[in-house]
Image (tube, rainbow, N blue to C red; front, side, top):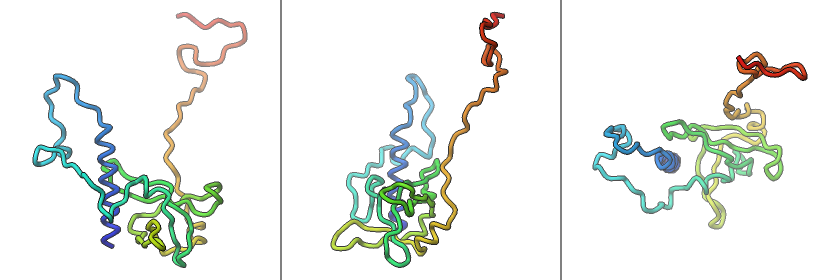
Length: 171
């Protein structure tokens, strides 16, 4: 249980630090201060200088084998779903398929996993209490797709179709 909490916290912190690093700087001459939530209490950045043995990097975590209730590999982590505050909501597991082709994606909450050590010093693995068949029967994870702009042909400015040889209006 402690490994799950530490793992979740480490990945969440990693994602937050990446999001903060991508935040645009305030324009020159701006006197507004950053929000209190992003300002460290000591006034200095809170740097993490080393990775601990019980922490994983997202680059290492993605692709981690997922074992089923029978301790057999049932898939691997294909992605991590987190909210705007950096809290991990789910680990996306690719189940079935062959060499990444035809795999079904299922998202499971972090509490669904336990970390198990790899064999003979190999990478740690994640275990769930479900079988591969149960995950194949579970509802697929649906990735968000932003709505696409549509044109109906009646938009102002000549966006619609015109008969052949007809010039656009110049109103």
